[in-house]
Image (tube, rainbow, N blue to C red):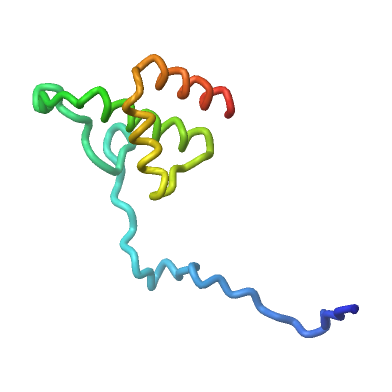
Length: 104
């Protein structure tokens, strides 16, 4: 089966995200600060909270980050497996993260 395309009919490309600067719905960005940052000022170390994260929670967060960095973002149904892996000793968790780091 052969599909023939009609290339004789001109079609205009329409970019739905293009905006006329004169009629833009979004305001123009503000002038950057001295350091070129548009967002938040740097954190003040004296205002930091002194809350410690449980080592198991830290391993869980590190494992999420390692999986995502390796191109394997965890799905919601992976939560139980990640929780179980986070319960293992820190040395095993470090080995898992090292393996994931070498996949990228």
